[in-house]
Amino acid sequence: MSQIESFIIRLATHKDVDALTDLHCSSFRPEEHIPFLIGKRYVKATYRWQVKGKKAYTLLAESNGRIIGLVAVCDGPFTVPMFKACLGEFIFCLARNPLLLLKKKLWLRLFRRPDLSDKGRIIADYPGFAQMTIGVVDADFRGKGVFPALVEATKAISKSRGSRAIRAGIYKKNLSSRRVFIKGGWIETPELETTDTVFYVAYLDPEFPKELGINLKNESRQ
Image 1: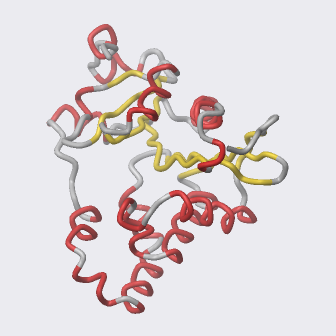
Image 2: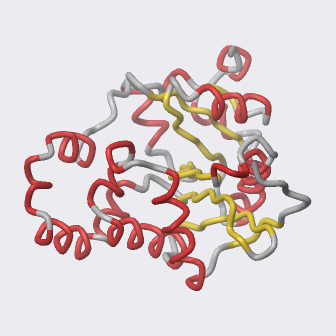
């Protein structure tokens, strides 16, 4: 395990896109993450959008000039706008690897609609609700407080961008990431839960839960 004396958190710029892409691709196997399954060029296109686009931002953790973690957040639902922005690279990757057309998992994930209740759908699409798109920490630096620091830093940035809450979808089996959000005071929200994903919410506006019809006393059960 690598030692870490300190790290800084800052907003990523276009100069960081290649390093963010490399960190992503070294942290996942293609079958674990759909953008990587499509291809590294497509992964790079998603980070280009998340760094340079007007609807999203990316925070990174850096130690001695090395990017050791990242968290990206979109100001609202991100699946459709990101896919549209990266459509050219998507077509290019399909042309280079036509066998992707046979990947059932690819099409199911790209075009799936989360199995939310009517109330969950209203909450998910409500204006002012930001969404965390990805979180990655270099394997050598996990368990050293990098991810919790990145998650906490999103609150001030998203609030400054006009967001009233942030939601983060975590696979139910990913217990280590779930503990980060629980310890950070994010509230588990059953209305947004899907078959394989649980959602945690950080409310940046104390009036927002009432507007959404959410009783925090009930939702805060873990």
